[in-house]
Amino acid sequence: MLKLELDPTVVERCRDAAQRITADVRDFIEPRTTTAVERTVLRLFGINEAAGDVPLANLLVEDLEAAGQLGMGSAYWLANACKHTKLSPQEVARQVAAGELDWLRLPQTPPSELRPVMKELAGPALEQITSARRHRETKLKELGTGPKPLLYVIVATGDIYQDVVQAKSAVEQGADIVAVIRTTGQSLLDYVPDGATREGFGGTWATQENFRIMRAALDEAGDKAGRYVLLVNYCSGLCMPEIAALGALERLDMMLNDALYGILFRDINMQRTLIDQHFSRVINGFAGIIINTGEDNYLTTADAIEEAHTVTASQFINEQLALAAGLAPWQMGLGHAFEINPDCEDGFLLELAHALLARELFPEAPLKYMPPTKHMTGDIFKGYGQNSMFNLASVLTGQGIHLLGMLTEAIHTPYMQDRYLALDGARYIMNNARGLGSELQIKPGGIIETRARDVLERAMLMLEEVAGIGLFAALERGMFADVQRPRDGGKGLKGVVLKAEGYQNPFLTLMNNQGVK
Image (cartoon, rainbow, N blue to C red; front, side):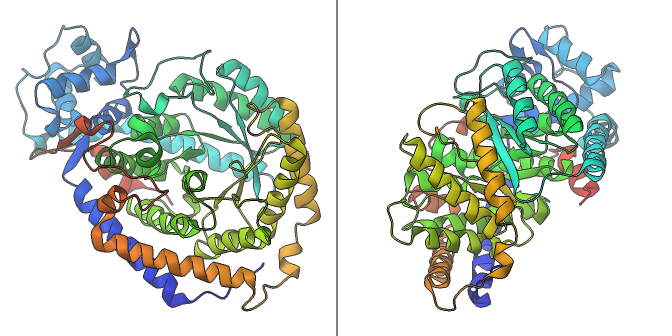
């Protein structure tokens, strides 16, 4: 495999700065919870029904919020109600939602005495997620996957049943990973819709039932094709941990789960997002799900040559935040992208430098490599050429997850034939160049090595500056993706709550203690 000669002292300084940034964030997170975290706890206790179009988890958390009791945590109030009424969590939720039970007026048991009740109530969800993880591991051992890098495609019809048709077709054509793109705007909804859906805008609603439908379809298609096909969706936005929980219950394999994406590109409050991302990653870690981070998006708003170091800096921060939540390195699909202007002379050498740098800095991470999008113009012939260069860079530098570029990028969402051409082109190049990287060497002091060292050193300086002022201040200054966000601005700040004395989230403790790596 191609190898860069990087200065280990610089790498160590990057990691040290990222650890200090993460420690500061953890100190902020620890005494706080959010409405999304508390809804997630209820969903993990099995409260996944809706009253009309409103999820019961939302109704119960709004009830606690209105009474000023959310600081104790939803687990406390639910366990207390179950203990005193002898009802199941679902029965308590239905009666509270129907106005038949005032769960806040029941006798209050001291929090320490409710721990055994919480542990017992948490058991079914933990068993279901563990069973899903074991099933995935068995299928992977039995069927395996395609050769690396795994070929990743998207479906985005807006209708889950049409998505199924397109996803099965993609598997027949050779896809290893299928992502269901989420409908436009769902990241800003403060609830998760219920049931199967057939109307979306630029994508399909992320719901538990839609997850279940697509999981069954890919299992069927994978068994027929003789390989395990991975399913992806988004746990981001205002319902980040809730969707992580639903994905874990329904055996999704990957989740788009970046610590900063919602802040930078959806204007979600940074305090809310950083608290939510921690719990979502604890769930993903326990469920054996691979996260996909979103650094590739930085290069859609900033120049890939001028701002490449911000991608590397963010990867270090995402790595440390993931480790703090219990994820193993093999679960970190850290993002980067092939986004240098195609008119740049020797641009391919610079792309190789960036891809190799990510590969060497995070050797155990699968890495998610994104195709050219910013400079795709609608010229399908040039676009096919750009994607071919991207395919070559990916196989040459040993990437793990390869999102296929479409020749019709910037024109419309992919048709079946677009996906077929993308898969066919990738297979041709990757099959022919599979061992090329092991036959070549990087020229010492050449363009590739010099560029990689420069990006790494700039990332180190940036990380040390962020460690000095804190991540919140760095985001306020616009140090990532050229986007500035105020600490108290954006959507969702109202949902941040200080924990009261006696607060408990049993899933945080149990998932961290029982995690299987």
